Image 1: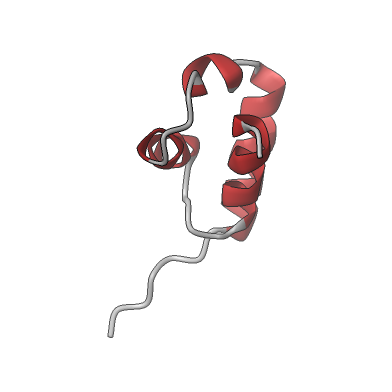
Image 2 (image 1 turned 90 degrees about the horizontal axis):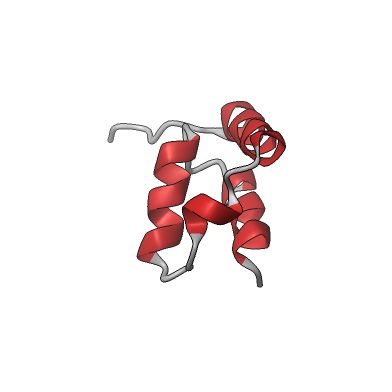
Length: 61
């Protein structure tokens, strides 16, 4: 899976409130050139919108 495809998959997972956290996760997974590949405003806008629409904050036990 490419870095961009993985970014969209993670955005749809509901685990990320914003693009910054999503990028950190991609880098932690070993994805390369994350900042360069996600630099386009259109991609950033899409990913941010998906994160905002799907994010589910963790429930405190």
